Length: 105
Image (tube, rainbow, N blue to C red; front, side, top):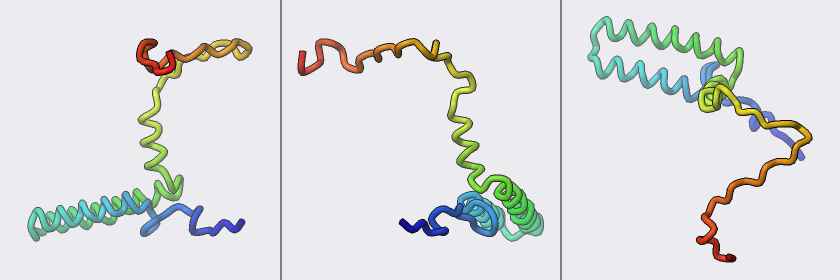
């Protein structure tokens, strides 16, 4: 079975994750067109476009899927409950349906 390189390589745009790059570009465009063509909005948009893209590229060099890993880390609990002894038998899970609601009872 052939595995094509394009299917396993991370999807990057201008050297950074494509979703974050798209958000950066949209933020700059909204800042320019929403704030008017004033010198300070254009300067801030250029600064965000260059500096923000540089930071996104630096993060992508470290880990190309950094944002996915970070979001997954935020969703996991910080403290995990102990599972008991390795030799012990696992407990029977609680039934999802009440005993009277089962159709086979």
